[in-house]
Image (cartoon, rainbow, N blue to C red; front, top):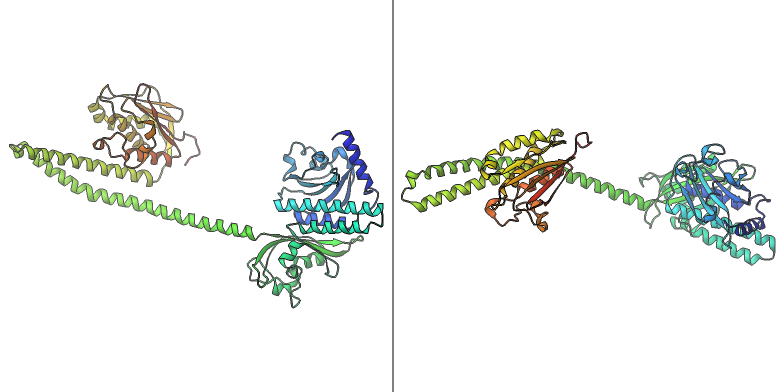
Length: 545
């Protein structure tokens, strides 16, 4: 803060004569209301000159002076903005402050609203704090900022009264401004005197119906007429009304949830924070309550709970559907494979050269039928694999890929030999975490595809390499156009235009298996032509289950 501006700031502060006179009762009320709005036990009105911090009035602790160098409020005083620290111990410019470390106090939560003079100079702060972490809502922050403005209005009113006792109209204007500031608070605020008579009520409280808040229904009993427990059905007894409790017991009432039900109006759920108001001699001579309307929050919570219930029901239905799919696939495979086997047997008998001698057309028909049966059997096997990939439980354990690849190459040996494909595994492969059966199905599909879709114009070659948990299967076959590489993972997708060569389910099963393991699968180019499939699975030692 520049020296000239600092000199003017201190001069304005002293012009109010706040440091040499006792605090007014209304300033004490502002600090009490601030603590109630923030829902904390301690609050203070701090003023800072060029050397010291003065705690003009406090709630919840005995005030004390300290040097300005030790003041938390002085750290960001020149910014003139609201300070909100849910945990001051985590803030680099506050954690070593003596009010945080324990030398002067044990402040954890800290928030302050600047006290800004009409000329724009910061004289101090309205400060609330607690010994445990907490966080203010946007409405609470606005409320504290408004209360800081009210405190400055009181300062200004006193200054004007000191300058001229004849400026009554000006004082009345300031009172109206103060009333406007109170009415701008979103929190409902009500204060009462020793006999329960209302001494302060803002517009937000009137909107909630003051009789309900104060405990004064049409027959003298708000509990039976207006105030209920959060369930909206159980009346609150007169003795349990927060303002009554605060006045009777002389202790704050924090976070008391109520429902206000006034005939002809929508029920409102509120959180009440009440505190006793004390006279100079310490006796209770009134109480103040701040009400936070939580009706919208309850509505949002109910919507979330209903959404969670619907999601749980959907997950249950999905598990049932997956079980049905597995059962259906098993039944279909049995009911279809057996007749196909019989048809295939009869076709083999019909294909006997002695039976078709002299009937070339019949021989052609028999051959075509046999090929159709083989395709149907392959399709059924692929559908069964797809069902198992999506519904079978994943029994995760360490899987050495070297061993699995060896088993897959042995199973595919006849197909690889018939295609004249050279399969190369130049280095060791990693261990991954997954279901051995599903991973073997995945690799058999991928290597089988690499062999099946070879380029007839050159010798077929497949290379299997690894980079950490990523496994690459690169072929020099016909490849897949970049624009179609996502489509090939869809059911029954074909991008080569040769319907007879594939049924379009294998890569869908691969995607299912990889996703159920929490991995990824992508397709890229092989240098010189062909496709490279990259699969990444969890490594051994990961937390995936």
